[in-house]
Image 1 (tube, rainbow, N blue to C red):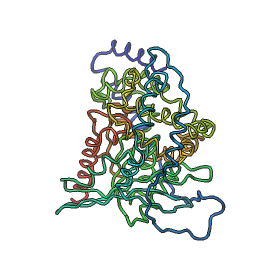
Image 2: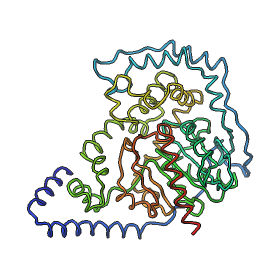
Image 3: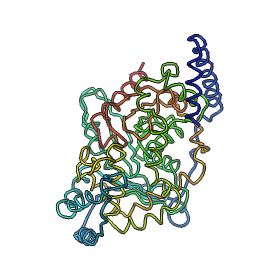
Image 4: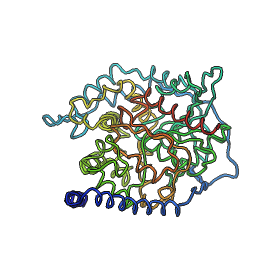
Length: 473
């Protein structure tokens, strides 16, 4: 369909003089803009907050709101069990010259597993995890885990609370290298950072009932910030974290001082966007595209359809039968590592699929990668984390209230070049009414804070400074 439209437009463009061409494009863009404006006018300004109960059994009359200090622990028995299971792994030889195109290459997997078994020190990594203060508190019947890092404040600095939310198959550990860049700055602003674990991930308790999606997580995280005493704060997210922080901004915009995203979620189903997609390849300036937009978007079918189909098989499994697929992953540490680490290869750069080692150690150390895997392994959280896909996708995602509700808080968007999908700024306006910052990042992919903490911290700081300077005028 899209290819046929492109050919038709290209043929038509060649037969028009410049004045008629401009009239055609402006008219088409105008129709699209009117439709987008009408949709914006008709969309709700906020989404209902609601309430929930995700604990086992019936909801009690009262709930303990105490915040408890939490320390990650391990044991000799835990390590011995891991080693026993690793030693019993059965490997299958890869196809010749297949690299990472068939998934995690088992030749390289053997090397990773050997390091895991003989050199990786989980006890030492637990000490690394515990370098920041950990806490738990019960919200809506489940224990919610979070780290809370207070800043080193210098004279003249404004301290601002910032919640950072991870996605799948990541964890709060993704933020460990960016935290010191935000809590110790030479800027006018410095951050008090809160990184929760999504319920069902890591050290947060899994919901005991069906239906826990990003809206429920957003409400719980609002309650967490309220319990910590924050009435206004910034939020940042990528992957599921981007959806959750979007929802937080939609639920209580009076509390969210600003929203920063490294995965841009915009509506792409309007007539105006379809026209801009067809025209933008040939006349990008007329539809608000930059040269960088063109480079990242086209060829459209290859980058936005075929590549996504190649990379989204996991999504269909997890959105339909997560418990079945998760059984093997929860029982085999090597299977779990292959499943998780393959994403840190291809989602960092799709070109890594053509490398024998998947390019894993170009951006990450094996210690960091395996620490993230161990958080899933030791908490048995792979299955509940996979269920999050089913809970969010079991109904038509496009008709959900958060998909038809715009975001009105100040928004900063960091567009990393190797993110799975690119959203031009011209499209971002269909969802975000107040974009204060849109940055074409020079490098980096899906796990931005983990891959490029320096770049990410710089973008967060410059965005927040823009918001703060305008709010003080």
